[in-house]
Length: 222
Length: 222
DNA sequence: GTCTATACGGCGATAGAC
DNA sequence: GTCTATCGCCGTATAGAC
Image 1 (cartoon, each protein chain N blue to C red):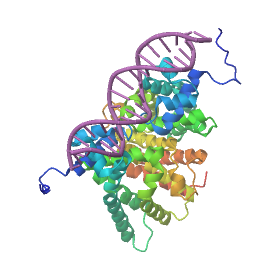
Image 2: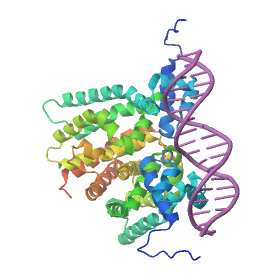
Image 3: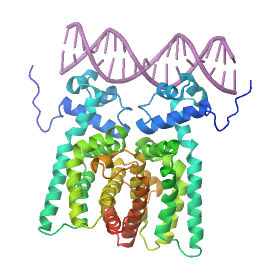
Image 4: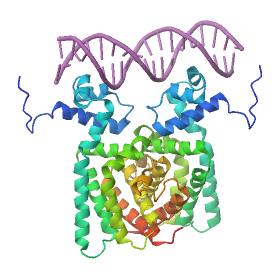
């Protein structure tokens, strides 16, 4: 029997549905709390099919992480390219660099695409975990982040080396908690401020970290 | 038979050892990845003893979280009290408020106490999780955080309400990633910057978030 | 009350038959 | 590709030792 052709208006392939289900569940509950039975049930396939396509559970998790990594990286490399090109022979400004760093993420986060939002929440999970926080983030995002740091060095030639790395750390933390989407802000503010207002969240974040970076990269080493 | 008196130079009680072991393991691997057998093995006690003292696994987790919550909260309330008292009739400065907020944490984090460092890593885990991020953080830290937000309102009477809440969000994210201690910074900087240099990390963090807060609370709503 | 040894029911990932 | 079986480990209950 012929495999059914996958046309745009049809359901995604089973393999894709497994990835989608895994992405959603891992993002919400983490790696260990989620079972293959939950994933395959949500995907509407047999339990064993996950193992058939992806091997052990850990490899499925990696496959989920890898699926969107290139798309994300390319978008952000392009933004940084344009930022540097716009600066021409001059050094780029901190403002422009931060805009290039956060812009593509804000656009994705703000989009209606549920899969991408799950993916960002998963990145938040990974970034804060001991198992993956060092390893995976390095493996997938180091080239991009190193370019970003290099751009900051151009913008702030007098800055202390460590101040730049710590700046990146604080930015990464603020960003990650935004991805995580815990709803904490809504509760804390009694509903007056919504963590799902990503537009405002990214606008403020840009200003916040830009000011923060300028502050600690301009001052004397403490 | 008399319960053995717990003198300083003796081993802690078994109950305490279970809490210590659970704290260390939960902080490193999260709730679901850790088994009661690992915990009790590390504590050097029988499996069933965890259940005897604390009931179900989830309750043990809560007991770990609760154990140090009061101490932490009291230290931070006191710091904020002193900050407000020092300001007298004037409004406190943003710098002083941030110092009061981060100071006690920096001191604890920088101390040699392993248990406290595990606890802070656990807070990082909780703060980023969907299950606990909203609920537990609210339950334990809302009064303190609300006082802190109130102090910021005094310091920045013109500030937009939402800008203050988002400021807290970015601060919380930066702080949380610092607690998490993933070693990412060390790898990224090829060893030139160490995430375990908490002294530098907190000093920079204070300047960073102070500048960030002033920036987004002074400007027009974006 | 504190603690240990053991047992139970259940569900996990995965391999092998089909 | 699919289904079923297996085996191990999980959290927890219990019975009794100290």
